[in-house]
Amino acid sequence: MECGVETLLPLVVGYVLGSVPFGLILTRLTGAGDLRAIGSGNIGATNVLRTGKKGLAAATLLLDLGKGLAAVLIVRHVWPGAEALAALAAVLGHCFPVWLRFKGGKGVATLMGVSLALAWPIGLVYAVTWLGVLFLSRISSLGGMSAAVVAPVAAAVLGYAPYVPVLALLALLVLYLHRENIARLRAGTEPKVGSRK
Image (cartoon, rainbow, N blue to C red; front, side, top):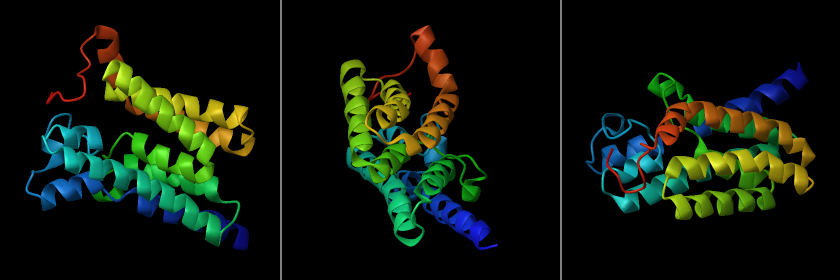
């Protein structure tokens, strides 16, 4: 029973923290409207940027990252060894929040947060990859997907093998949630950062 509780509670903590829709909350509080009716309808920072409010987009990015970071660090402190469960649940919470009928974001910023919390070198590689690809391509989805794919590879190479399975699973989730972006990338129609489409 105790083992079951120690598995369930980290999942609950991770999911609840991850499911807080900061992008939606911030845009509503600042009068920017319902984010789900803007641009792609996504609740993440890239879509917040389409409102024209760069500061709001930056805040959304940091908060989405922060909730993933917090989920893993809290669980590591209370239930040492269960941080991978919290990482998984936090990203799932962001992507499938019960409060929004399981229609959330695509997990890129929250995955960066959990990567940093699991092991900062993994998070550093994630951040450099994301920002580097974004800088070169100006395509947010390409940067995010590249970072997600690199994370489990970085974990394996840098000696964090226990985190490879969860990061690989989350990378697959991020790719799946970006399937429409992938189709647009192949067609050459994926919008670049700053576009309101």
